[in-house]
Length: 334
Image: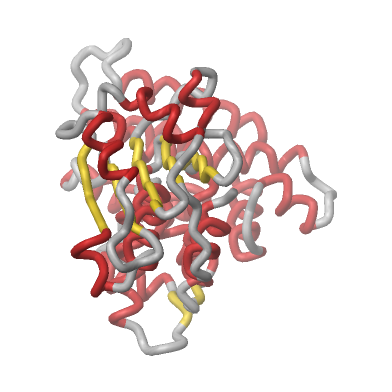
């Protein structure tokens, strides 16, 4: 089941006896665990029938005592095990997982890594009526779509370029992104579509000095603007680390390079091949392709790989990050 399907069941009052939530992305794990905590019991019953335990502080015998008790004047009790990955005797719960109490809703949050599904305990988690969910990290190119989906679920809308800007600036930290969306919901009029201006005004992204403006300036060979952005990045290098800038430019010029091989294809096919979300982005890539040949793009990709290594200390003679950035931008333009 997907996180959305699990949450939909919880919202509808359909609960499984066991939720084992594991994986590298804690956002989805917390989202499901919080939903069970909020919906499985009315607030008036939580004092008697809700127990929260921590993996580092509890052993399997104590946990089993809680799991096997009967609820007090309620149809169910809820037992939540947080930081389950810290519990040394977790595998001793196998017999309970195979035959859980029907009146107990057990939620285990096993964060930042996967459980081994090949073990006896892991196989038990694949049993009937067990919600065995893996929270997977999203790739960089999935974040903008996730932001759009998250907005839709909140009955908000967001412009494609605004979702892309948020993804570029905030990275893959879904909890951080969700917090920023909450702030935007509070600060914007009801029904307003989130725009780039809203992102810049409310999240603190510089209107003139961000990676999107850098891409535009490089694509049009605007040397003056590139120099201004380079100076701004250099003066705020901790907020604009070279390795992050290189990653963004690598993705950008890789798409420009691919665009040359798609010449003559309809825009719908190009958008699909480049994994672009709207014509708004495609226009910019076409402008860049007009200014950079396929051969030049290949050279730039080579420079980016070289400077990625140098920024990590490989083949670097001690040149500071700010100077490496200046060199890289000059090579792209020349």
